[in-house]
Image (tube, rainbow, N blue to C red; front, top):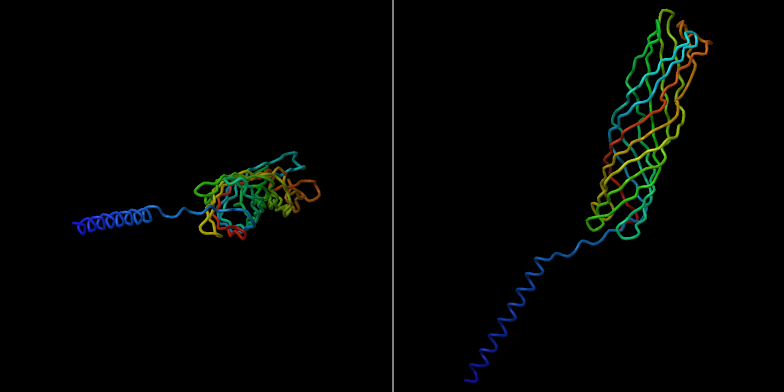
Length: 254
């Protein structure tokens, strides 16, 4: 009788032990380890590809006729860019970064036509921006996803060339490019792929306030005679919409 009681106690203990072990195994299977929080503090650099579209002004002042022609010149195309900066994460879910980005190649417009009496004008403008400013972000998904706004200083080269053709022949204005300052504003998302690499998507609106690059017309066209004081101004009041997709490497991230 005593032996039967001991046997029953051992069986009950074994059953409880196996049940506890099974429950623990279930917990290990059903509860994966938490994703570690990510810290964005540190230097980073990367590359982007994208598409931009916008316009700028082209202006011809004909002193001989006392007339001015102003055209809106559209420019768009594919581009690439390089960028670099530094981020601070503090407190846990907020990030502030300072970034410099250069977009290339120089964005050229298609030829755009304008007219003054007896003269056909053809303009081609260009824009080449550099963006400098902060990114202010909010973190989600265990700090792996950053939603941010951006803005700051836009500087770059703007300009182009113009050709006037009429009964007197041809005159050209070739001011090249001048440096101009403006501003930009944008927004984007960036997500970490692993401890160092991330992908990002960003939209930016870029605006320059300058009247553009100006040069005298040189040639034989009557309305734009050399020495008359007639000028062409290219790339004035330029703006751009830029959509980019990029990859960054975070050197100090962990």
